[in-house]
Image 1: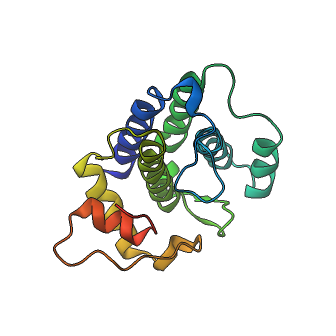
Image 2: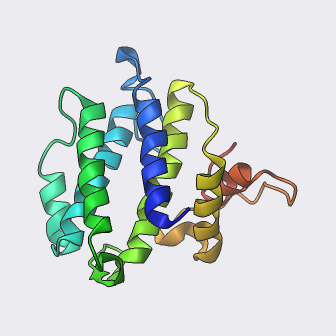
Length: 186
């Protein structure tokens, strides 16, 4: 699985759980401190919009300002996810795009690295959403393997200040190890 495939699978995993969100679950807490389900979904949709903007050449500061200056979710959050994910996929998939630098809040980086960060973010938030709404928390094993590799090669906390729990032993499943490394309890 390449990184763009991983992002597509992560979006599918997130979308499957988003389709299960009931009317009374939008304000349910998530494993992300102080985020409810609505905020978590808006974060992923906004992240898709942010990615498209910076991949099209906008600075991270300008993209953040544009994304944060508008509501991320309309009356059909699943449609919002689908549309923004398609635009994000097209932006990452443009010929030669992955070899170009992009502006990011962590500093300029190759688009290829940013693609890994997007797959990481959406994957973990698919699990967060599942946990928040009581859905199946099992993620696609190939996706977990891909994202676990990214996390294991990165600095602890992925540059976002995440503290690994350090509870997953050597015999833990890849998903358990991924969750542990990203501060989540399986």
